[in-house]
Length: 359
Picture (cartoon, rainbow, N blue to C red):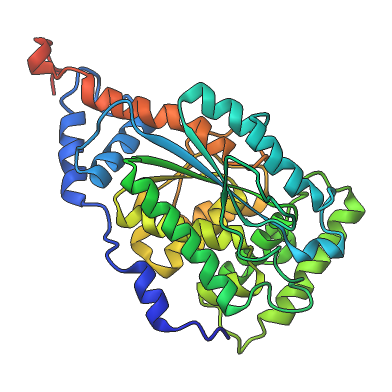
């Protein structure tokens, strides 16, 4: 069990309040007066009402949008759970900084500020410009052999996310996407899913970056062994303990950012499986966080649906993606912004002089 103090958890969740339901009702009432049949905008109406509940109708367009991509390595890659070598994490960080990844393309297209964070890559980035340097250590330990992080490493990683979330709020961000890069992190997300939900490794585990059947079976077996090591019947399954034992530095940092964003009334667009694992940790620490979460999409990783169902989130998009990077969250941002624009700019039946439907 972690020795992290209750005071630390109390500190990082302090001041987080659920979105204001009275504002959601204000939004619903306005939506019902707009020049359209009742409910005809479907999920867009739900999104608009959620945004009003979060922002208290301070819905300035265009919205100030940002995506943070947290990068870290995982010691579990030593067990052959990924089709790609761990060096790809480092290489992809450089690709992000050159503007050549999918999330770069989408962020440019949709006017989303992109920030890349080194929270635990097993490489040196000395002198590399454009990167947010917040390395806690060079990757986690091999969770099959020992806890992924020490108490100190876990606290540092969470604080990185909290600090960056506070900076985003100070910069005026109103819509925040949280993504990641880290070879081996689907194994961490699957272990988190099993530990929190009590489901089997086979149910929560996908093929990640393209494992063949034999490699997939090996990955499932490794996760089963990880769960047996860390989560015997008498072991704590508190969120903070789970992320220390089997999480990643980037997952801990993403959870910290989500907590800080919720405290500042910023809507959080969750990306895929790993990002949603971080959201489950954040919501486990403070349930009010759930009201700030918008699921950008649903990935092809089977564990992702389990986590979305656990959080009660319906994805904005279903595009059969499994990329990570925050790409699905950024893709959802124009839909969210469209919902806000419709809410803010459509005329009512009264102002437009349009007759309403008869009862």
